[in-house]
Length: 406
Image (cartoon, rainbow, N blue to C red; front, side, top):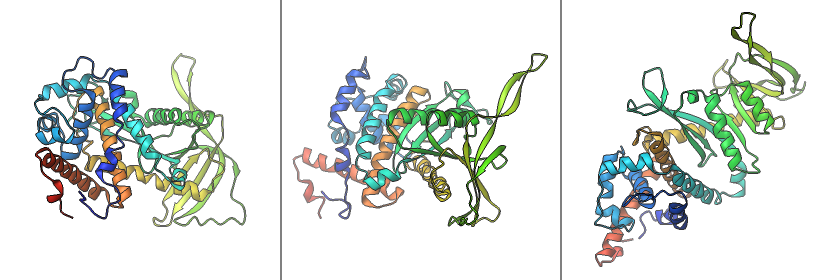
């Protein structure tokens, strides 16, 4: 039943990566099916994936309609007589175990990442880390980060290896409005999961805490972060030689040196009041400053604890950070992650893991078939539809090849 004859990978190939044995096993170990009659973990897994693919604006109401649709039942071999209401979906999202979906997400990522070639594995050791705030229609959030508009917001923080999202978390507590809180937690979570890693984590200007950078140093976590241009430091040693070529291709090297950074120290004055005093932090860092050739006078300051890589590679690593911006845009525009289906943290976690699982399926489809983001999402959805039609034809005693003529 070929749909796009020039494609190397079809939806059938990708559905084969869904670990049916693990789904059954996790249903027991995570107690995801405890006290539920119809919406078991497996059914919610397929319902959410199908709903994300088939709906431009997913909601609990559209999920209700999808579950009660005979096409969905045939596609995933479910009981045609079962029916549910929107309230049942709402309750399940608010109470079911997010760990069930987290483990499925990690397993599917591990399977897909094993398909990387050796060269890709080397390239994907550069982990881009960033966050996105979602505040649309979240006035009724039970818990969230207060923002300047008066609405509560949710923060999605994701580590992205250049091809797939390799780690993620949801933050709703007030302190996580700061990237100095959120990003280190995601990075250390990924470090613990990826034993023996040789990754380097690249971030934008959201993270600026000297204490966090020192903690990365102490734990031997390599990083590159874009620093603010007025950052205070003391230069200890310059790495630019007298005959060094300062041309880095798209930029010009202005400074490359070992530095000590200032940090704030909280002290008590004679009256017992607390105030902050700037002191030099322990530990050494590398500062690389480049000027863009495309934008005259535009400089970029990079702080890193990588003293081995050439300055050109430090600058190029930051340019490759843009991949995660493209990924977030894909999540928002094609998979509608900006619209919250659930208004409590439990349901938001479930939806994030399922959105990332669906995203990985589409991204692998995109990569294998060498097509764009929008085309991949559209064709992937078309293959899901055509697979359902074929199953219906067979179910009715027909031959799908008579309909899907080559």
